[in-house]
Image 1 (cartoon, rainbow, N blue to C red):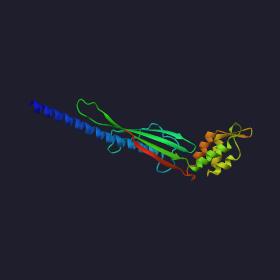
Image 2 (image 1 turned 180 degrees about the horizontal axis):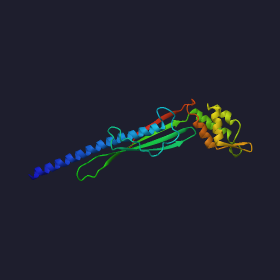
Image 3 (image 1 turned 90 degrees about the vertical axis):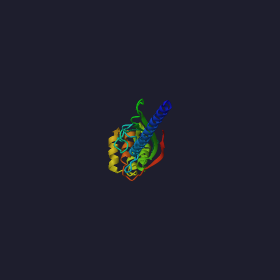
Image 4 (image 1 turned 90 degrees about the horizontal axis):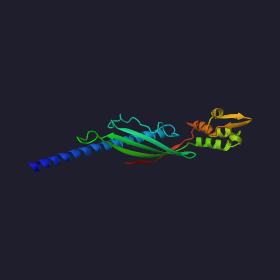
Length: 215
């Protein structure tokens, strides 16, 4: 009887452990897909299927997209963070998505636990030719006394496929006249002109560099 009791106790323990392992494996799989869903959301914010690529990380950062309504991911969450580094016309983004799902009731004597998985995505966006042209115009024509811009700025900007009236609006909003000089906020002027490039035909590209699971 004692031996039988020990065998039954051992069998019960093995069964309980097996159930716990299965529950955690299921939660881990769900957490993986939660992280994947968050990574897809973050990547779409930077490089949407239609329209222009983003010029900066999404806000708020980190973000918590509502993935709990996705079938199979009820009770799960994803936290998506973004970091970036830019050169003159290229911006590299790293998106980190952390998915968390509860493992459920693991039985008496076991504290509730959650499974967590991470996905890291690297994306590079190449600024469009129009924006690069506008930046070059400001650099080349706004280096005078006190940062003043010369009379060729307008002509240069219109060669970037920016409408003349739009160029004038950007100059009016970012510059002022001082004793015959056109003094401009070069950062503001560059941003205004570059933002006016959307839909101008300058084009742009997005490259997926890596998509990694990071347990």
